[in-house]
Length: 196
Ligand code: SF4
Image (cartoon, rainbow, N blue to C red; front, side, top):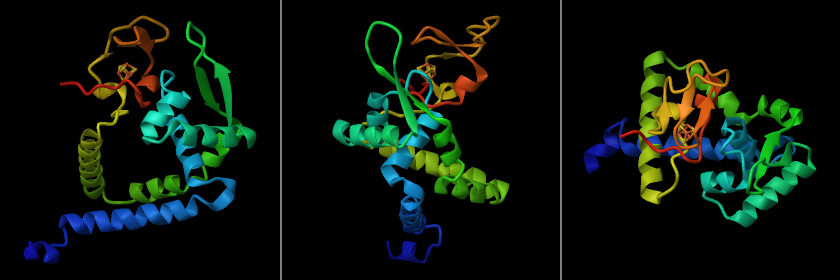
């Protein structure tokens, strides 16, 4: 509609800055010996819970191909940013961990700079922006049929006091049947299912 073009809150006035911002961030991600795909993998591993720090979960999260993710992980391991161990239990899946070098690199992440700039926005602007972007992301994830990768607080398998008294608790994941600490609940998960 013609009227929308004059409206400074029209949809395009939101997505155009978003597109340019993403492009500028991508350009900065080429600085410092890493590329955008490698940064994405490091950020994912810094946020993923212990059920999700695997090559398969990263592939699902990015919606990328197995081959691309595998090349990214090989490069990160060669450069000393991640280590791989075989997960305990029946299936021989790989568990990925960040090395101290990666943790240090993440303090120089261009997106971390942007997050600090977002902190400086007014409280109301920040809250509305956060809510609006989360809504747009959810819509796009649903449209694409991708996994949500949300955190425990919004998951239907989460039980707030399910493991009260357990040293590894006090929360419970009904799906994995394991205790969750307070710290666990802030991480993202490959099996997250939005509570109804
Ligand atoms: S409660 Fe949900 S998000 Fe949390 S670990 Fe379990 S499946 Fe994952």
